[in-house]
Image 1 (cartoon, rainbow, N blue to C red):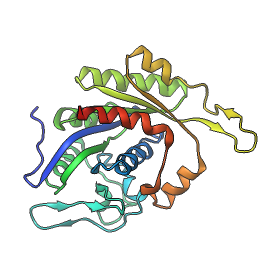
Image 2 (spheres, rainbow, N blue to C red):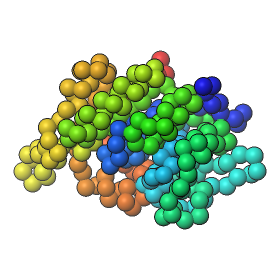
Image 3 (cartoon, rainbow, N blue to C red):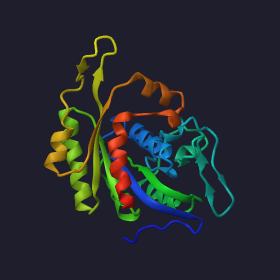
Length: 254
């Protein structure tokens, strides 16, 4: 399948897929954290919310206004920090209504988000992909010019098995896994300083070694993360532990 190309008013240097084998692991939070860190480092960043049936990126950045079209191009919404965003929630009238689209229509929607949005100059586009390894993920891998993926997980054994499916799918598609991110890896008590592994011991380092993935990050459970996302302060998300994944992404510039 021929890869989609951006329009003449857009120049996207690198496209990164943010992937999870199942829902509920915090993929959109990780997308937000990576986007915010790249922006702080002076990069021009965009987020394409490809999770069409479960979009959450606009809420995390407090964006409620709909996007505007000039008839030939769609203008993305831009956060206070300068992150450009497109999502189905910024197009449809009521964000609480389900998106009852079949696979081919979802694929066309993602194509339109990539080709028909006036992105301008972008260093990194992060594609917040739908969870799983099904039809839509396959369409995205085949049609978007993805340079690499970041795979998001949590420590549970069940999730570990599903993560391996995502790793193997990426390898089958010839797309490099840049990093594994284990979200909700641990909780550090601010009273006693003790670290608690609420969802079980971390498995991300073991997986990275098994599949020769060059980088991994362990993100803590932190109440301020949830509070900022719930309040729409995605621009202000700061996660020290995501920085090594961001540095691995930036190696694409070399």
